[in-house]
Amino acid sequence: MSQLSRYTGIDLSDLNWYQAANRGELNHQAARFGLELAQLAYDFEVDQWLDAGWTDVSIQVNSRLFSGVGAQDEEKDWLQQAKNMVLPKLAQSLKSVANPITEIRSLLNQEQELETGKAIVLLKQDEEKRFTIAIGFMGTGKRVQDWAGNMRFMHEDHLHEGFTFIANQFIENEKDIHFPTAASALGLKDLTLDDVLFFCRMADSPFRLILAGHSQGAAVLQVWTWKKRQEGVLREYLNGFGYAAPVVASQPVDTRATCPITLFLAEEDVFTRVGLSHHIGTAWRLAADEAFRAACYGKYDKDSLFSAVLGLFNRISDTRTGFLFCLAYLESLSDRPEKMVLESLSAFLEKPWAESFADLPMKTEEWADKLLRQGKLAFAGFYQDVEGREPSDEEVGEMYALINPVMDRFGAIAFSQMIVKALHLTHSLVNRETGLSDYAPYSYMVIRGFDDLTRVEEEKKPDAGA
Image (cartoon, rainbow, N blue to C red):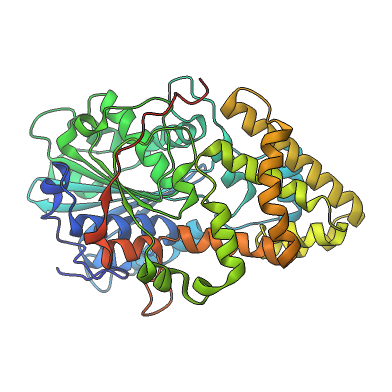
């Protein structure tokens, strides 16, 4: 049954592009499908997918796994209809900030929960005994602990520790993700994702997989696919699509022959330049020309503060310079009054967090001092994890000399708020406003700017941490 997708207008039931994308061709339909799947991992809005023939949906949120969402046999199947309505909403609710005060204290005391992976899995029957499994990995959530994995830069096996941890969390659930529709069609008592991956190690597997993710989800996608290839899953049964992908490996990986992953990078998206030192997959980049900026940045395109912030972002070439930016920002903020410090830092928090500052049993100056001190210690520690040494005063001072005049000119609060806005505008997967779905960097890329993508030949960088 043909069902046009919400954001890119493709037929979610049409997978005729699979072989071309698996061979390494840059395929327009594949790029659009991947974006829809990556967005599904955020909103869990499965209705159009179910209408297009997808079923056997499982949703992972942190340590919880929800199953039971699927196709209805008939309109009067009230129990299935109820599951389809309730379970995605229940999963969505677990992603929210439950107790802002507790989360702020956890941030300061470095007690973040580590099991923060989020993903969605669903199945489509292509032929009588042929099936496609789709897996969407969600990007970084809105809670403090959702960022914890991004900041774990150790790489004993040459893969980013934090992203590997989240990938392993999903791997642990593979034996608990069931596909009753495929099991019934194949005459099996049960069938799990673990079983599917076993089949995918053999010739003529009845299964193939499509994977997608945005931001942290694109990082987890790279790690998961690499690990599965090392376990023997055959290349021809994998297709991965990552949007706004961070770099996840400390050494170059010959992925063109081993991992069929296509990565999409927006030129002015700073998150695509941080992590370790190498992507896994073939990357394509879209330059930020006048038409792109007008569509994706809207009224901010000509805003002088936005332009200044974007100019600073473009100075961030890798994780090292990213942490220097953060340290210099905090150093510049240290020169401001305590109340201004708190209002500036609250720009980086979700609204429930920001509103909770007033409820905390601590004086303004004590909070400002503790947040600045803890922030500087944290980012200096992250810098040392990446570089193997402490940041020098000279390095921080050079970045401070760029940031401080901008903060002086526009004010600390406005500058901080614009940092958040600029990060969002340059990194967004889709625009959820009606009729404006392609007015975001990655949806624009796969709808309007696809013909302007250019292949990225990654530079030969030194191994991360070397």
